[in-house]
Length: 575
Image 1 (cartoon, helix red, strand yellow):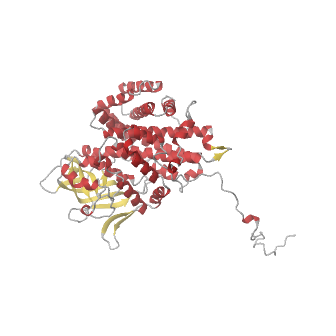
Image 2: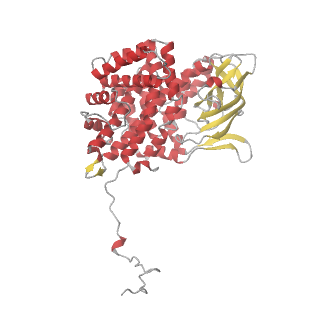
Image 3: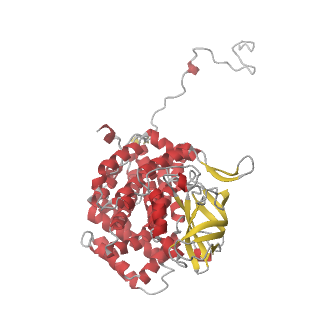
Protein backbone atom coordinates (compact mmCIF):
# COMPACT_ATOMS: atom_id res chain seq x y z
CA UNK A 1 0.00 0.00 0.00
CA UNK A 2 1.40 3.40 -1.01
CA UNK A 3 2.25 5.81 1.78
CA UNK A 4 1.09 9.24 0.62
CA UNK A 5 2.95 10.76 3.56
CA UNK A 6 6.29 9.50 2.21
CA UNK A 7 8.64 12.55 2.28
CA UNK A 8 10.00 11.48 -1.12
CA UNK A 9 6.65 12.24 -2.68
CA UNK A 10 5.59 15.59 -4.03
CA UNK A 11 2.40 17.50 -3.21
CA UNK A 12 0.39 15.38 -5.64
CA UNK A 13 1.80 12.05 -4.59
CA UNK A 14 4.46 11.75 -7.34
CA UNK A 15 7.84 10.35 -6.38
CA UNK A 16 10.60 13.01 -6.39
CA UNK A 17 14.04 12.31 -7.92
CA UNK A 18 16.69 11.39 -5.43
CA UNK A 19 20.46 11.91 -5.72
CA UNK A 20 22.00 9.11 -7.73
CA UNK A 21 18.68 7.89 -9.05
CA UNK A 22 18.70 6.41 -12.57
CA UNK A 23 16.39 9.08 -13.96
CA UNK A 24 19.01 11.75 -13.27
CA UNK A 25 21.15 10.30 -16.09
CA UNK A 26 20.99 11.85 -19.58
CA UNK A 27 17.78 10.98 -21.38
CA UNK A 28 19.57 10.15 -24.63
CA UNK A 29 22.84 10.23 -26.50
CA UNK A 30 23.27 12.95 -29.12
CA UNK A 31 24.18 10.98 -32.24
CA UNK A 32 23.49 11.14 -35.97
CA UNK A 33 23.33 14.93 -36.11
CA UNK A 34 25.04 17.49 -38.28
CA UNK A 35 27.94 19.76 -37.42
CA UNK A 36 28.95 23.30 -38.19
CA UNK A 37 30.66 23.74 -41.54
CA UNK A 38 33.60 25.89 -40.45
CA UNK A 39 37.37 26.03 -40.84
CA UNK A 40 37.39 25.04 -44.49
CA UNK A 41 38.95 26.65 -47.54
CA UNK A 42 36.35 28.52 -49.56
CA UNK A 43 38.71 28.60 -52.53
CA UNK A 44 40.51 25.27 -52.87
CA UNK A 45 37.55 23.19 -51.70
CA UNK A 46 35.41 24.70 -54.45
CA UNK A 47 36.73 22.81 -57.44
CA UNK A 48 34.49 24.63 -59.89
CA UNK A 49 35.88 27.96 -58.67
CA UNK A 50 39.52 26.90 -58.98
CA UNK A 51 38.93 25.61 -62.51
CA UNK A 52 37.07 28.75 -63.60
CA UNK A 53 39.68 31.12 -62.15
CA UNK A 54 42.45 29.35 -64.07
CA UNK A 55 40.40 29.08 -67.25
CA UNK A 56 39.35 32.72 -67.32
CA UNK A 57 42.82 34.15 -66.87
CA UNK A 58 43.35 34.78 -63.14
CA UNK A 59 45.61 31.88 -62.29
CA UNK A 60 48.23 34.43 -61.25
CA UNK A 61 46.00 35.32 -58.26
CA UNK A 62 45.71 31.81 -56.83
CA UNK A 63 48.02 32.38 -53.89
CA UNK A 64 46.04 35.41 -52.72
CA UNK A 65 42.72 33.70 -53.43
CA UNK A 66 43.79 30.65 -51.43
CA UNK A 67 44.82 32.78 -48.46
CA UNK A 68 41.53 34.66 -48.62
CA UNK A 69 39.58 31.41 -48.92
CA UNK A 70 41.17 30.02 -45.76
CA UNK A 71 40.46 33.22 -43.85
CA UNK A 72 36.86 33.49 -45.11
CA UNK A 73 36.12 29.87 -44.22
CA UNK A 74 37.45 30.14 -40.67
CA UNK A 75 34.99 29.84 -37.81
CA UNK A 76 35.82 33.33 -36.54
CA UNK A 77 35.26 34.98 -39.92
CA UNK A 78 32.02 33.11 -40.59
CA UNK A 79 30.81 34.21 -37.16
CA UNK A 80 31.12 37.84 -38.28
CA UNK A 81 28.40 37.16 -40.82
CA UNK A 82 26.14 35.76 -38.13
CA UNK A 83 26.73 38.69 -35.80
CA UNK A 84 26.27 41.33 -38.50
CA UNK A 85 22.73 40.05 -39.06
CA UNK A 86 21.84 39.51 -35.41
CA UNK A 87 21.21 43.22 -34.81
CA UNK A 88 19.72 45.29 -37.62
CA UNK A 89 21.07 48.82 -38.19
CA UNK A 90 19.38 51.60 -36.27
CA UNK A 91 18.71 55.16 -37.39
CA UNK A 92 19.16 58.25 -35.23
CA UNK A 93 17.71 61.20 -37.13
CA UNK A 94 18.59 63.55 -34.24
CA UNK A 95 20.92 63.51 -31.27
CA UNK A 96 19.58 63.74 -27.72
CA UNK A 97 19.72 67.52 -27.83
CA UNK A 98 17.52 67.71 -30.93
CA UNK A 99 20.23 68.40 -33.49
CA UNK A 100 19.86 66.67 -36.87
CA UNK A 101 22.50 63.93 -37.27
CA UNK A 102 21.10 61.35 -39.77
CA UNK A 103 23.30 58.64 -38.32
CA UNK A 104 22.93 54.90 -38.92
CA UNK A 105 24.50 52.61 -36.32
CA UNK A 106 25.72 49.16 -37.38
CA UNK A 107 26.90 46.11 -35.47
CA UNK A 108 30.72 46.07 -35.13
CA UNK A 109 30.84 42.84 -37.17
CA UNK A 110 29.46 44.75 -40.15
CA UNK A 111 32.33 47.21 -39.93
CA UNK A 112 34.82 44.34 -39.57
CA UNK A 113 33.56 42.78 -42.80
CA UNK A 114 33.56 46.14 -44.60
CA UNK A 115 37.12 46.79 -43.50
CA UNK A 116 38.28 43.37 -44.68
CA UNK A 117 36.54 43.72 -48.05
CA UNK A 118 38.03 47.13 -48.75
CA UNK A 119 41.51 46.25 -47.52
CA UNK A 120 41.46 43.29 -49.92
CA UNK A 121 40.46 45.56 -52.81
CA UNK A 122 37.01 44.15 -53.50
CA UNK A 123 35.87 47.72 -54.22
CA UNK A 124 38.62 48.82 -56.57
CA UNK A 125 41.34 46.33 -57.53
CA UNK A 126 40.58 46.00 -61.28
CA UNK A 127 40.44 49.79 -61.67
CA UNK A 128 43.67 50.45 -59.79
CA UNK A 129 45.64 47.46 -61.09
CA UNK A 130 44.14 46.52 -64.47
CA UNK A 131 45.60 43.40 -66.06
CA UNK A 132 44.27 40.27 -67.77
CA UNK A 133 42.17 38.41 -65.22
CA UNK A 134 41.82 41.36 -62.80
CA UNK A 135 38.00 41.32 -62.90
CA UNK A 136 38.02 37.53 -62.62
CA UNK A 137 40.22 37.61 -59.51
CA UNK A 138 38.13 40.36 -57.94
CA UNK A 139 34.89 38.48 -58.72
CA UNK A 140 36.33 35.36 -57.05
CA UNK A 141 37.12 37.38 -53.92
CA UNK A 142 33.67 38.97 -53.87
CA UNK A 143 32.10 35.53 -54.40
CA UNK A 144 33.87 34.09 -51.36
CA UNK A 145 33.17 37.16 -49.22
CA UNK A 146 29.48 37.03 -50.15
CA UNK A 147 29.21 33.47 -48.83
CA UNK A 148 30.13 34.84 -45.41
CA UNK A 149 27.65 37.73 -45.46
CA UNK A 150 25.75 39.37 -48.29
CA UNK A 151 24.48 42.67 -46.87
CA UNK A 152 27.75 44.55 -46.57
CA UNK A 153 28.45 43.65 -50.17
CA UNK A 154 26.01 46.35 -51.26
CA UNK A 155 28.20 49.39 -50.42
CA UNK A 156 31.28 47.47 -51.60
CA UNK A 157 29.58 46.86 -54.95
CA UNK A 158 28.33 50.42 -55.35
CA UNK A 159 31.73 51.88 -54.55
CA UNK A 160 33.28 49.51 -57.10
CA UNK A 161 30.63 50.35 -59.71
CA UNK A 162 30.88 54.12 -59.28
CA UNK A 163 34.31 54.31 -60.88
CA UNK A 164 33.38 53.96 -64.58
CA UNK A 165 30.52 56.46 -64.16
CA UNK A 166 32.69 59.06 -62.44
CA UNK A 167 35.36 58.71 -65.10
CA UNK A 168 32.91 60.36 -67.51
CA UNK A 169 33.72 63.67 -65.79
CA UNK A 170 37.50 63.86 -65.47
CA UNK A 171 37.60 66.79 -63.02
CA UNK A 172 35.34 64.94 -60.57
CA UNK A 173 37.24 61.69 -61.12
CA UNK A 174 40.53 63.37 -60.32
CA UNK A 175 39.14 64.79 -57.10
CA UNK A 176 37.21 61.77 -55.79
CA UNK A 177 38.64 58.54 -57.22
CA UNK A 178 41.92 58.46 -55.28
CA UNK A 179 40.02 58.13 -52.00
CA UNK A 180 37.22 56.00 -53.47
CA UNK A 181 39.72 53.42 -54.70
CA UNK A 182 41.99 53.59 -51.63
CA UNK A 183 42.17 50.42 -49.52
CA UNK A 184 41.17 52.27 -46.38
CA UNK A 185 37.86 51.88 -44.59
CA UNK A 186 36.76 54.80 -42.45
CA UNK A 187 33.17 54.53 -41.21
CA UNK A 188 33.15 57.91 -39.46
CA UNK A 189 30.47 60.38 -40.46
CA UNK A 190 32.83 63.27 -41.22
CA UNK A 191 33.63 65.37 -44.32
CA UNK A 192 35.41 63.64 -47.18
CA UNK A 193 38.42 65.90 -46.75
CA UNK A 194 39.02 64.37 -43.31
CA UNK A 195 39.06 60.76 -44.55
CA UNK A 196 41.59 58.66 -46.41
CA UNK A 197 39.02 56.28 -47.88
CA UNK A 198 35.48 56.87 -49.16
CA UNK A 199 32.46 54.75 -50.07
CA UNK A 200 29.85 55.60 -52.68
CA UNK A 201 26.15 54.73 -52.83
CA UNK A 202 23.44 55.13 -55.45
CA UNK A 203 20.03 56.82 -55.29
CA UNK A 204 17.95 56.43 -58.44
CA UNK A 205 14.40 55.35 -57.69
CA UNK A 206 11.45 57.38 -56.44
CA UNK A 207 8.00 56.48 -55.15
CA UNK A 208 6.10 57.14 -58.34
CA UNK A 209 8.50 55.50 -60.80
CA UNK A 210 10.56 52.67 -59.36
CA UNK A 211 12.53 51.19 -62.26
CA UNK A 212 11.02 53.81 -64.57
CA UNK A 213 13.53 56.46 -63.55
CA UNK A 214 12.41 58.81 -66.32
CA UNK A 215 9.35 59.41 -64.16
CA UNK A 216 11.60 60.95 -61.46
CA UNK A 217 10.52 64.36 -60.18
CA UNK A 218 13.56 65.39 -58.12
CA UNK A 219 14.75 68.72 -59.53
CA UNK A 220 18.31 69.91 -60.09
CA UNK A 221 18.72 73.69 -60.11
CA UNK A 222 22.00 75.27 -61.30
CA UNK A 223 23.79 77.19 -58.54
CA UNK A 224 25.63 79.56 -60.88
CA UNK A 225 26.24 80.40 -64.47
CA UNK A 226 28.10 77.15 -65.10
CA UNK A 227 26.15 74.28 -66.61
CA UNK A 228 26.89 70.70 -67.53
CA UNK A 229 29.53 68.20 -66.37
CA UNK A 230 31.24 69.18 -63.13
CA UNK A 231 28.96 72.16 -62.47
CA UNK A 232 27.26 72.62 -59.10
CA UNK A 233 23.51 72.15 -58.71
CA UNK A 234 20.98 72.13 -55.87
CA UNK A 235 18.73 69.06 -55.64
CA UNK A 236 15.19 69.17 -54.27
CA UNK A 237 13.03 66.05 -54.05
CA UNK A 238 13.17 62.55 -52.61
CA UNK A 239 14.62 59.10 -53.13
CA UNK A 240 12.54 56.15 -52.06
CA UNK A 241 15.34 53.58 -51.88
CA UNK A 242 18.87 54.55 -50.91
CA UNK A 243 20.95 51.54 -49.98
CA UNK A 244 23.85 52.04 -47.56
CA UNK A 245 22.91 55.62 -46.60
CA UNK A 246 26.08 56.10 -44.55
CA UNK A 247 28.21 56.20 -47.70
CA UNK A 248 30.25 59.35 -48.17
CA UNK A 249 28.67 60.26 -51.50
CA UNK A 250 25.94 59.06 -53.86
CA UNK A 251 25.29 59.01 -57.57
CA UNK A 252 21.80 60.46 -57.96
CA UNK A 253 19.38 61.02 -60.84
CA UNK A 254 17.48 64.30 -61.01
CA UNK A 255 15.68 66.43 -63.58
CA UNK A 256 17.95 69.26 -64.72
CA UNK A 257 16.73 71.98 -67.12
CA UNK A 258 18.07 69.86 -69.98
CA UNK A 259 16.50 66.61 -68.83
CA UNK A 260 17.24 63.69 -66.51
CA UNK A 261 20.88 63.91 -65.44
CA UNK A 262 23.33 62.20 -63.10
CA UNK A 263 24.89 63.93 -60.08
CA UNK A 264 27.47 63.23 -57.40
CA UNK A 265 25.97 64.19 -54.05
CA UNK A 266 28.21 64.17 -50.92
CA UNK A 267 26.99 63.75 -47.34
CA UNK A 268 29.05 66.81 -46.35
CA UNK A 269 29.63 70.08 -48.20
CA UNK A 270 33.17 71.26 -48.95
CA UNK A 271 32.86 73.94 -46.23
CA UNK A 272 32.42 71.22 -43.58
CA UNK A 273 28.66 71.66 -43.10
CA UNK A 274 26.15 68.84 -43.48
CA UNK A 275 24.57 68.49 -46.87
CA UNK A 276 20.77 68.66 -47.05
CA UNK A 277 20.23 64.93 -47.47
CA UNK A 278 17.90 63.80 -44.70
CA UNK A 279 17.13 60.18 -43.82
CA UNK A 280 13.40 59.67 -43.28
CA UNK A 281 13.37 56.05 -42.18
CA UNK A 282 15.12 52.72 -42.69
CA UNK A 283 13.44 50.02 -44.74
CA UNK A 284 12.30 46.89 -42.95
CA UNK A 285 13.58 44.27 -45.37
CA UNK A 286 12.98 40.55 -45.47
CA UNK A 287 16.64 39.90 -46.24
CA UNK A 288 19.87 41.87 -46.47
CA UNK A 289 19.34 42.71 -42.82
CA UNK A 290 22.87 43.84 -41.96
CA UNK A 291 22.79 46.56 -44.62
CA UNK A 292 20.70 49.68 -44.04
CA UNK A 293 18.42 50.92 -46.81
CA UNK A 294 16.60 54.20 -46.40
CA UNK A 295 14.12 56.71 -47.70
CA UNK A 296 15.58 60.18 -48.07
CA UNK A 297 14.55 63.73 -48.76
CA UNK A 298 16.78 66.22 -50.58
CA UNK A 299 16.15 69.73 -49.32
CA UNK A 300 18.47 71.77 -51.50
CA UNK A 301 21.36 69.31 -51.43
CA UNK A 302 24.58 70.30 -53.17
CA UNK A 303 25.63 68.01 -56.03
CA UNK A 304 27.83 68.13 -59.14
CA UNK A 305 26.72 66.93 -62.55
CA UNK A 306 28.36 63.73 -63.80
CA UNK A 307 28.32 63.22 -67.55
CA UNK A 308 26.29 65.28 -69.98
CA UNK A 309 23.08 67.06 -69.09
CA UNK A 310 20.01 65.09 -70.11
CA UNK A 311 22.09 61.90 -70.38
CA UNK A 312 21.67 60.72 -66.80
CA UNK A 313 20.53 57.21 -67.63
CA UNK A 314 23.38 56.74 -70.09
CA UNK A 315 25.85 57.97 -67.48
CA UNK A 316 24.63 55.95 -64.52
CA UNK A 317 24.13 52.81 -66.63
CA UNK A 318 27.90 52.31 -66.39
CA UNK A 319 27.40 51.95 -62.65
CA UNK A 320 24.24 49.86 -63.00
CA UNK A 321 25.96 47.40 -65.32
CA UNK A 322 28.61 46.68 -62.72
CA UNK A 323 26.12 46.34 -59.87
CA UNK A 324 24.11 43.92 -62.00
CA UNK A 325 27.24 41.89 -62.57
CA UNK A 326 27.80 41.75 -58.82
CA UNK A 327 24.22 40.53 -58.43
CA UNK A 328 25.27 37.57 -60.58
CA UNK A 329 28.34 37.04 -58.39
CA UNK A 330 26.36 37.36 -55.16
CA UNK A 331 23.60 34.96 -56.24
CA UNK A 332 26.15 32.43 -57.45
CA UNK A 333 27.80 32.74 -54.04
CA UNK A 334 24.46 32.12 -52.38
CA UNK A 335 24.05 28.94 -54.42
CA UNK A 336 27.50 27.74 -53.38
CA UNK A 337 26.90 28.50 -49.71
CA UNK A 338 23.57 26.66 -49.77
CA UNK A 339 24.72 23.57 -51.62
CA UNK A 340 27.87 23.36 -49.46
CA UNK A 341 25.68 23.24 -46.36
CA UNK A 342 23.42 20.60 -47.92
CA UNK A 343 26.35 18.44 -49.01
CA UNK A 344 28.02 18.74 -45.62
CA UNK A 345 24.88 17.77 -43.72
CA UNK A 346 23.85 14.93 -46.00
CA UNK A 347 27.35 13.48 -45.87
CA UNK A 348 27.05 12.76 -42.14
CA UNK A 349 23.34 12.41 -41.43
CA UNK A 350 21.74 8.97 -41.71
CA UNK A 351 18.09 8.03 -42.19
CA UNK A 352 16.47 4.66 -42.71
CA UNK A 353 19.78 2.91 -42.24
CA UNK A 354 21.91 4.83 -44.74
CA UNK A 355 23.80 8.12 -44.96
CA UNK A 356 21.60 10.60 -46.82
CA UNK A 357 24.17 11.34 -49.50
CA UNK A 358 24.28 7.63 -50.39
CA UNK A 359 20.54 7.36 -51.01
CA UNK A 360 19.57 7.47 -54.71
CA UNK A 361 16.85 10.10 -54.49
CA UNK A 362 18.87 12.43 -52.29
CA UNK A 363 21.89 11.98 -54.56
CA UNK A 364 19.70 13.11 -57.45
CA UNK A 365 18.72 16.28 -55.56
CA UNK A 366 22.25 17.09 -54.39
CA UNK A 367 23.79 16.51 -57.80
CA UNK A 368 21.16 18.74 -59.39
CA UNK A 369 21.94 21.55 -56.93
CA UNK A 370 25.64 21.12 -57.71
CA UNK A 371 24.93 21.41 -61.44
CA UNK A 372 22.98 24.63 -60.99
CA UNK A 373 25.78 26.23 -59.05
CA UNK A 374 28.54 25.13 -61.41
CA UNK A 375 26.67 26.49 -64.43
CA UNK A 376 26.04 29.80 -62.64
CA UNK A 377 29.71 30.12 -61.75
CA UNK A 378 30.85 29.30 -65.27
CA UNK A 379 28.65 32.03 -66.77
CA UNK A 380 29.57 34.59 -64.11
CA UNK A 381 33.32 34.24 -64.47
CA UNK A 382 33.03 34.17 -68.27
CA UNK A 383 31.42 37.61 -68.05
CA UNK A 384 34.19 38.65 -65.66
CA UNK A 385 36.77 37.76 -68.32
CA UNK A 386 34.82 39.78 -70.87
CA UNK A 387 34.97 42.76 -68.50
CA UNK A 388 38.75 42.44 -68.56
CA UNK A 389 38.86 42.71 -72.36
CA UNK A 390 36.13 45.21 -73.30
CA UNK A 391 38.42 46.80 -75.88
CA UNK A 392 37.66 43.71 -77.96
CA UNK A 393 34.34 44.21 -79.79
CA UNK A 394 33.25 40.60 -79.28
CA UNK A 395 33.92 40.69 -75.54
CA UNK A 396 32.22 44.08 -75.16
CA UNK A 397 29.12 42.77 -76.91
CA UNK A 398 29.08 39.75 -74.60
CA UNK A 399 29.17 42.02 -71.54
CA UNK A 400 26.24 44.04 -72.82
CA UNK A 401 24.13 40.96 -73.52
CA UNK A 402 25.20 38.36 -70.97
CA UNK A 403 25.12 40.67 -67.95
CA UNK A 404 21.37 41.05 -68.42
CA UNK A 405 20.90 37.38 -69.34
CA UNK A 406 22.92 36.17 -66.38
CA UNK A 407 21.43 38.65 -63.93
CA UNK A 408 17.96 37.44 -64.88
CA UNK A 409 18.62 33.71 -64.90
CA UNK A 410 21.09 33.18 -62.06
CA UNK A 411 19.36 35.50 -59.61
CA UNK A 412 15.96 34.05 -60.48
CA UNK A 413 17.13 30.47 -59.91
CA UNK A 414 18.72 31.16 -56.54
CA UNK A 415 15.55 31.38 -54.45
CA UNK A 416 14.38 27.89 -55.42
CA UNK A 417 17.94 26.62 -55.03
CA UNK A 418 18.09 27.90 -51.44
CA UNK A 419 14.70 26.37 -50.64
CA UNK A 420 15.77 22.97 -51.94
CA UNK A 421 19.04 23.06 -50.01
CA UNK A 422 17.07 23.89 -46.88
CA UNK A 423 14.82 20.93 -47.52
CA UNK A 424 17.86 18.64 -47.78
CA UNK A 425 18.67 19.53 -44.19
CA UNK A 426 15.07 19.21 -43.05
CA UNK A 427 13.54 20.83 -40.01
CA UNK A 428 16.87 22.03 -38.68
CA UNK A 429 17.42 23.90 -41.92
CA UNK A 430 14.44 26.15 -41.20
CA UNK A 431 15.75 27.24 -37.83
CA UNK A 432 17.11 30.77 -37.46
CA UNK A 433 20.18 29.54 -35.56
CA UNK A 434 21.52 27.95 -38.75
CA UNK A 435 22.73 29.58 -42.00
CA UNK A 436 20.03 28.36 -44.38
CA UNK A 437 17.29 30.67 -43.09
CA UNK A 438 19.46 33.70 -43.80
CA UNK A 439 20.47 32.36 -47.22
CA UNK A 440 16.80 31.78 -48.06
CA UNK A 441 15.75 35.28 -47.05
CA UNK A 442 18.63 36.72 -49.01
CA UNK A 443 17.93 34.71 -52.16
CA UNK A 444 15.22 36.91 -53.79
CA UNK A 445 17.06 40.19 -53.21
CA UNK A 446 19.40 40.18 -56.20
CA UNK A 447 16.57 39.21 -58.54
CA UNK A 448 14.75 42.41 -57.58
CA UNK A 449 17.51 44.96 -56.99
CA UNK A 450 19.16 46.74 -59.93
CA UNK A 451 16.22 45.91 -62.18
CA UNK A 452 13.79 43.03 -61.72
CA UNK A 453 13.50 40.05 -64.03
CA UNK A 454 11.23 41.78 -66.52
CA UNK A 455 13.59 44.77 -66.72
CA UNK A 456 16.51 42.46 -67.54
CA UNK A 457 14.55 40.69 -70.26
CA UNK A 458 13.45 43.98 -71.80
CA UNK A 459 17.09 45.12 -71.74
CA UNK A 460 18.03 41.98 -73.69
CA UNK A 461 15.39 42.78 -76.31
CA UNK A 462 16.61 46.37 -76.47
CA UNK A 463 20.22 45.25 -76.98
CA UNK A 464 19.23 42.82 -79.73
CA UNK A 465 17.25 45.53 -81.51
CA UNK A 466 19.74 48.40 -81.17
CA UNK A 467 22.97 46.42 -81.48
CA UNK A 468 22.60 43.36 -83.72
CA UNK A 469 26.28 42.59 -83.08
CA UNK A 470 25.38 41.24 -79.62
CA UNK A 471 23.50 38.35 -81.24
CA UNK A 472 26.50 37.67 -83.46
CA UNK A 473 28.73 37.61 -80.37
CA UNK A 474 26.35 35.23 -78.61
CA UNK A 475 26.31 32.72 -81.45
CA UNK A 476 30.06 33.00 -81.98
CA UNK A 477 30.40 31.95 -78.35
CA UNK A 478 27.99 29.05 -78.87
CA UNK A 479 29.63 27.90 -82.11
CA UNK A 480 32.85 27.34 -80.17
CA UNK A 481 31.10 24.38 -78.50
CA UNK A 482 29.67 23.00 -81.75
CA UNK A 483 30.00 19.24 -82.00
CA UNK A 484 30.66 18.77 -78.31
CA UNK A 485 27.14 17.58 -77.54
CA UNK A 486 24.34 16.88 -80.03
CA UNK A 487 21.70 18.08 -77.58
CA UNK A 488 23.39 21.46 -77.34
CA UNK A 489 23.69 21.68 -81.13
CA UNK A 490 19.94 21.13 -81.49
CA UNK A 491 19.24 23.67 -78.76
CA UNK A 492 21.34 26.33 -80.47
CA UNK A 493 19.66 25.65 -83.81
CA UNK A 494 16.27 26.11 -82.15
CA UNK A 495 17.47 29.34 -80.54
CA UNK A 496 18.43 30.63 -83.99
CA UNK A 497 14.92 29.91 -85.15
CA UNK A 498 13.34 31.58 -82.16
CA UNK A 499 15.23 34.80 -82.80
CA UNK A 500 13.92 34.84 -86.37
CA UNK A 501 10.35 34.05 -85.39
CA UNK A 502 7.71 36.78 -85.58
CA UNK A 503 5.11 37.65 -82.99
CA UNK A 504 5.26 39.90 -79.97
CA UNK A 505 8.88 39.77 -78.74
CA UNK A 506 8.06 41.32 -75.37
CA UNK A 507 5.43 38.68 -74.55
CA UNK A 508 7.95 35.86 -75.02
CA UNK A 509 10.99 37.68 -73.65
CA UNK A 510 11.45 35.50 -70.58
CA UNK A 511 11.36 32.33 -72.61
CA UNK A 512 13.93 33.70 -75.03
CA UNK A 513 16.30 34.89 -72.29
CA UNK A 514 16.03 31.59 -70.44
CA UNK A 515 16.92 29.69 -73.60
CA UNK A 516 19.92 31.97 -74.10
CA UNK A 517 21.09 31.43 -70.53
CA UNK A 518 20.80 27.65 -70.80
CA UNK A 519 22.61 27.66 -74.14
CA UNK A 520 25.56 29.71 -72.86
CA UNK A 521 25.86 27.73 -69.63
CA UNK A 522 25.73 24.44 -71.51
CA UNK A 523 28.29 25.63 -74.04
CA UNK A 524 30.71 26.67 -71.31
CA UNK A 525 30.34 23.37 -69.49
CA UNK A 526 30.67 21.32 -72.68
CA UNK A 527 33.89 23.14 -73.53
CA UNK A 528 35.49 23.27 -70.11
CA UNK A 529 33.85 21.16 -67.37
CA UNK A 530 34.44 17.48 -66.61
CA UNK A 531 32.36 15.24 -68.86
CA UNK A 532 30.15 14.14 -65.96
CA UNK A 533 29.15 17.76 -65.35
CA UNK A 534 28.59 18.71 -69.00
CA UNK A 535 26.67 15.53 -69.84
CA UNK A 536 24.38 15.88 -66.81
CA UNK A 537 23.67 19.53 -67.57
CA UNK A 538 22.76 18.93 -71.20
CA UNK A 539 20.68 15.87 -70.32
CA UNK A 540 18.71 17.67 -67.62
CA UNK A 541 18.36 21.22 -69.00
CA UNK A 542 18.26 20.98 -72.79
CA UNK A 543 14.94 19.28 -73.35
CA UNK A 544 11.32 20.23 -73.84
CA UNK A 545 9.79 18.43 -70.87
CA UNK A 546 8.49 21.63 -69.31
CA UNK A 547 8.89 22.76 -65.73
CA UNK A 548 10.95 20.62 -63.39
CA UNK A 549 11.99 20.56 -59.76
CA UNK A 550 15.50 19.93 -58.53
CA UNK A 551 16.13 16.21 -58.11
CA UNK A 552 14.68 15.12 -61.46
CA UNK A 553 17.94 14.29 -63.22
CA UNK A 554 17.51 11.58 -65.88
CA UNK A 555 19.02 8.12 -65.76
CA UNK A 556 22.70 7.82 -66.49
CA UNK A 557 23.92 10.91 -64.63
CA UNK A 558 27.07 10.30 -62.58
CA UNK A 559 25.71 11.79 -59.36
CA UNK A 560 28.59 10.43 -57.30
CA UNK A 561 31.14 12.35 -59.37
CA UNK A 562 29.18 15.59 -59.11
CA UNK A 563 28.77 15.27 -55.35
CA UNK A 564 32.41 14.35 -54.78
CA UNK A 565 33.56 17.31 -56.88
CA UNK A 566 31.54 19.85 -54.85
CA UNK A 567 31.59 18.56 -51.27
CA UNK A 568 33.70 20.70 -48.89
CA UNK A 569 35.99 18.50 -46.83
CA UNK A 570 38.33 20.75 -44.87
CA UNK A 571 41.35 18.76 -46.00
CA UNK A 572 43.04 21.73 -47.62
CA UNK A 573 43.53 23.41 -44.24
CA UNK A 574 45.83 20.67 -43.07
CA UNK A 575 47.88 20.65 -46.26
